[in-house]
Amino acid sequence: MSHTVEILSVGTELLLGSIVNSDAQALSRELSCLGLNVLYHSVVGDNPGRLRAAVELARSRADLIVTTGGLGPTCDDLTKQTLAGCFGKKLVFHPECAQAIRDFFARMGKEMTDNNLQQAYLPEGCRVLDNAWGTAPGCVFEAEGTYVVMLPGPPRECLPMFRERALPWLARLSEGVIRSRTLRVFGMGESAVEALLRERMNALANPTLAPYAKEGEVELRITAKADTPEQADALIAPVEAEVRGLLGELVYGANVSGLPQVVLEAAREQGLTLGTAESCTGGLIAKRITDVPGAASVFKGGVVSYHCEVKAGMLGVSQQLLDQRGAVCAEVAQQMALGARQALGCDLAVSVTGVAGPDPDERGNPVGLVYTALAAPDGCWTKELHLAGAGARRDRIRTLAANHALDMARRWLEKR
Image (cartoon, rainbow, N blue to C red; front, top):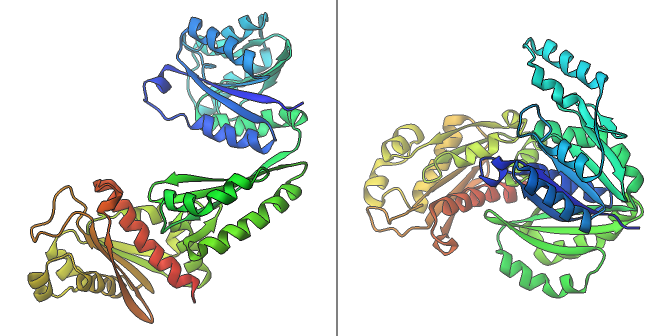
């Protein structure tokens, strides 16, 4: 039997948009790896009537319900009570859970209020999932042909609870595995990628191939289902080879977080350092690089040269050039990159200057006109970009400009 799953996220804050429902995304990935078919995501507020209706709907269309949230000590934490009622179960006090909650507060050096002991009440006959990352224990149980997994809502608790506590219990339900491999593509839009691969995508059944538009780039996800991970990987391999053959250098990595990771890893392997000089991107490239753990071993630093006097004073850009041509031209981008390489003492430096909008600059350069440059030990190269076709949104233009600069570094590193 192939099990079907509904993830039911509980919390009014999710409906209000106060927080992002990252739990559902993470759990979908984990469940898919077990070969369990996630068919529905539902979100419901902290209301017992609506929560009960959501549970009844979920059990009518899925045989595994995974809930997140609503296990805490406050009056609006209603998940356990509602689930227990839906399946005709009483809530039973678990002394060992109560002691674990007391111990948690003692370790934190905080006084425990009595309402925290509400978390020690769980549906009768359940298997307790102890919480080493917070106070609210979770649980799993089977009733009336439905499997139920209850997890706390905070992501720092939810995912480790699933992996370390719930997954061993769920593994017995798994029938095969689902494996995915995600190719990251930059330099071709989603519609063009889809048109190129449409015939192949339509012909595939297992594995499948699907494009996903990301900010400024495209993901191609190859997903296979098989009895073992090795068999699934064997199904994926020829499809990946075919895609790489069609897209060539546009594919910059597989199962990677993005261009910054690829650039940093390649530079680290080659013993090279990196720096940035940014104008219209305002430090976005440096920010994205330093978002990657371990970036300090490669990244020397960056200069945000938003004004011309900074370009001239800190990066050595010719004042005569700035007066005659303005800040948005290929020569300025080139001198910014060369200046950053010298000022920061790095092997590679990328630069960006352009018009992100919302209006043309004082010289009439249009929104979306951007120049990027790469300064390396063997030369300096520039690229002229016209990014207004991306919709002329300021944030979109800045993201694409940063991607192009990083991609210049990536391509140079790959050819060494």
